[in-house]
Length: 226
Image 1 (tube, rainbow, N blue to C red):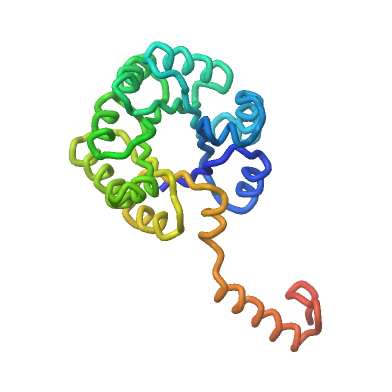
Image 2 (image 1 turned 180 degrees about the horizontal axis):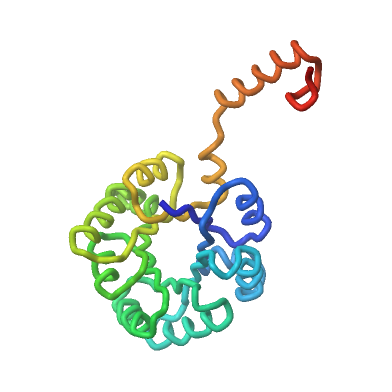
């Protein structure tokens, strides 16, 4: 499973990259607005940091297919052809996906709440389909189950589209999809940090340190001891 950061703060992105092995960054209009800078100022900064080969997912805003395609061309021009253009999975969005795939663009179908949305996006040629796991839960359905169903639908129908699961609330949701082998998950920095936080681990490490310092002296490590 690819491991992608869902944020537009360059400081947070750098912090996560410094610790975790990640595959890229996803953004959306709300995330960009929260960051407070002009969109391409932020996105170019991210692209420069993660490099030309890492995945960067950027969403269009237009409601009609023609406008979506025009936005996609601008996104590719500014950020490179390797950038994944996020297209909402609406009727107009499906049309835009088909047109962009004919041009060879990288496409991520987003705003997915149902299995059939994902299937239609896959048929339109999308590289990724992004179900909103926690938002689906909030509607009374099962977001993890939906993402698993979509993964199975792609495999059983011979589609190359991969799941890019999004909108996580906790590490358990991420774990279940990692165990299932979905293509990718995009995760906010706070949930990423939660994947490694564990009081039992901290207590164990502190106990090892205390015992070692009792043997060799305060502040001593394996590079200093006899």
